[in-house]
Image (cartoon, rainbow, N blue to C red; front, side, top):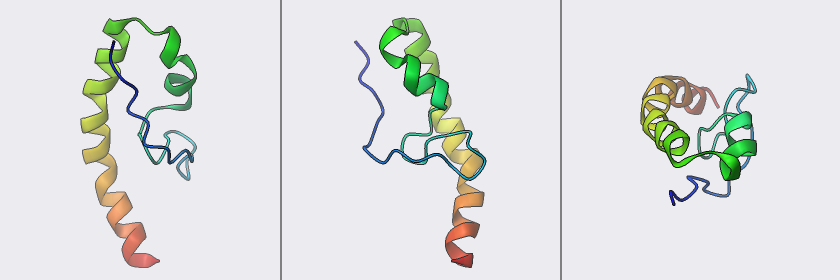
Length: 65
């Protein structure tokens, strides 16, 4: 079984689309236990792309803080 990518930092981003800790959508988090291995594998593969896409925004927010 694929382990959850949860890092115990559960907070939605400003747009409410992703958890700032694991980058899963709120729906993905809610459905994780019911997902098939195929669905979990797909989500895990998407997390790297999400991280790369969101990194410029995170870096800018850190600079502005």
